View 1 (cartoon, rainbow, N blue to C red):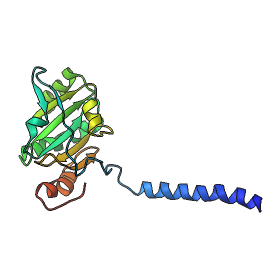
View 2 (view 1 turned 120 degrees about the vertical axis):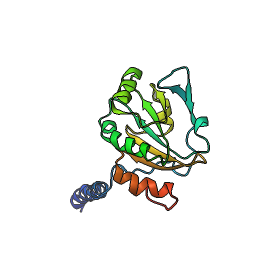
View 3 (view 1 turned 135 degrees about the vertical axis):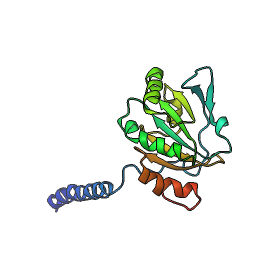
View 4 (view 1 turned 180 degrees about the vertical axis):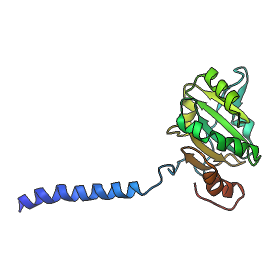
Length: 179
């Protein structure tokens, strides 16, 4: 009997592990529920990317819905999503606020000058503390924040027009949508 148990216990654990793996592989890795959804956006004040003497913070954003986009010049996905962010910015639906994360100020400014700047404001977070407060896993990540300061949605990975139209616009227009 003990010989069967020694075989069944590892086999049972293996089956359970395979089950979890199978379920995990069926999920979209860009859709991770954020503990911030439905809660107030974290407060911050940081230097402005263009002018360190100026500050960018949540006080500048009160009363307005906005996208909060975490990016860096070192991030391949950030480069991939940049054209979509420019298109979203040109649509004038919501302002995009950038959080330049763990980056070099000069490289970030050069990036925006060369590729175009979709951001109304860019906060410079060289140490990454504000990104930690927002629960950022890695760049790029984009949050939708309501006018009352509540986080409505989070996208992990590059933003594209399909995600924008499917997941973010319905929330902006008040018709629901997934996050």
